[in-house]
Image 1 (cartoon, helix red, strand yellow):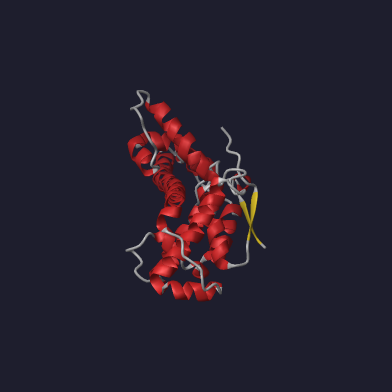
Image 2 (spheres, rainbow, N blue to C red; image 1 turned 90 degrees about the horizontal axis):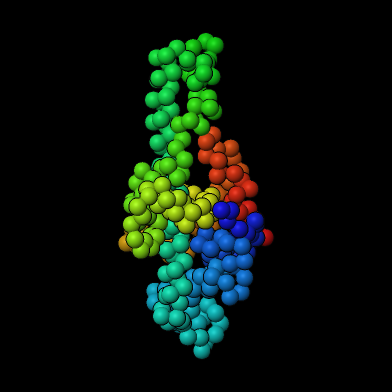
Length: 268
């Protein structure tokens, strides 16, 4: 079943506002989710409230009042935004789990390519598996070999369905008797809705690895919320990384990595 998602999103010029939109779109890429009153909009507002709450805790309310030029400003209470914040955070974790699944698919494909290539060499079919170098140099595997080597997302999920159900944090009311149906359900409910923002999960992961160690107490805090509070470090690079990754050619056999199946990210 096709997932209806926003075709493109324009990001504001302020780094913190752009980071709120980035995370809200990752959590809720569905078409219309960002409209006023929609779940994406509510999550973005919760991120704003969290930032004000966290800043008032770390630097004191007078600092926030001075920054907002409002001497009577009162910071939000955690209970006012926690529900929307937690729901959105769980959805971001689901997108990151989908990115992990993609990475696991690629890793499995590398091993499969080696096995299939070795088999072709043993059977004297090297030219069917590789682009043979005329002078005996490195010979890359043919696209047909990669397509055969990459396990489908559903097949990959089926191999460790319980693991992926837990990683995607899916509510399971009963144990499905049919493993194929369980894998199909996980793919439909969690993986496919994540495809429109898979490039954003890639970018967030890359930027967290690069900039996370610069953030105080990194490793002791919620990494996504810590990134939100330090948006100026990474947000513009994340947009560039995501758009580049969305547009580049990917491995044969990964049919869902089509640029048109992922949201186009634009800067204002």
